[in-house]
Image (cartoon, rainbow, N blue to C red; front, side, top):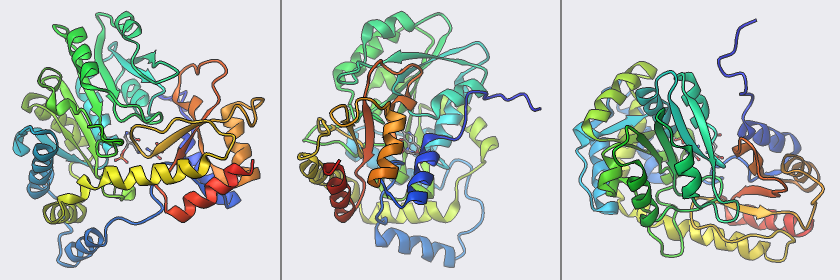
Length: 382
Ligand code: PMP
Ligand code: GLN
């Protein structure tokens, strides 16, 4: 028998729930992806570039035109200049970027602090590098950082902290004061930061995304990760990027070039064209997804689910304790898929040890209105 390097990893909940939704014909509000297509012009650009023969390897660091567009978008969004040659690397998905950033800084025996509930790819990446994750729980009510817990978790072995805002699965946002506090806490320590900002453009109610890119002290030690999949409605394109100061980028690229070498070429051409022609696309995203959140939440108001509208991401957390307090969230998600035709994600899977009695599931609202309406009707009938 092979001695597993990841003995605690099985099939991810995203695969499990999407499969169950497909088997049962349930509406799939589990795994996070839109049920509508990316912009026509973007898809046309891909066909054009494939037809024009842009089908061989791209530069290891990413197509210069796309890296330039990323730098231009960063300047427009956050008012900061990054050097596309020395600080921007295109990766085959944010997941690969995170993996490479972890391998860049974690050595055997190092500790990485992650916040629960936590996206599932961080811990295996740390373990494969020989490190160990120290889990710090976010406040179970509002998913804010508990600074005392974070401070207690720091040790001389802490080499990395992973933050994620807007936060999957809760939709919580870090504010400027949080970034300042984090910077003060780790000042003078040999700690790197991965800032997972894949939902950077999905921020609602007039709030602004506080990017680590615009925080000088944190950026000096950070890998900031984003995903074209989220911002351009093409999760299956698995293309993302990592922005980091030149010295960190140099080391990150040494890893990236042996994990994948480069990212898919025609996708990068298509994204570069689309970003150049439609800079307004990302600016429209907050209103676009806020309308979906509100449409869904308005129609859920008559249900026995309890919720507070999320501040960001395309996920809505709902508390089902008025419906089936007897079921844990994994059983609830399964029961709801099988018996009521709506698939969701149980929140406990994002924890090392879930808070006692928590009754939360996550619903993805990156869906057409008709899907959201049908789902809300089904959920109101439970
Ligand atoms: N981080 C978070 C928080 C996510 O929700 C996702 C979504 N899949 C990713 C990273 C990975 O993005 P990608 O699909 O570009 O690898
Ligand atoms: N990020 C997506 C989610 O949270 C899933 C990505 C995946 O399937 N691994 O639903």
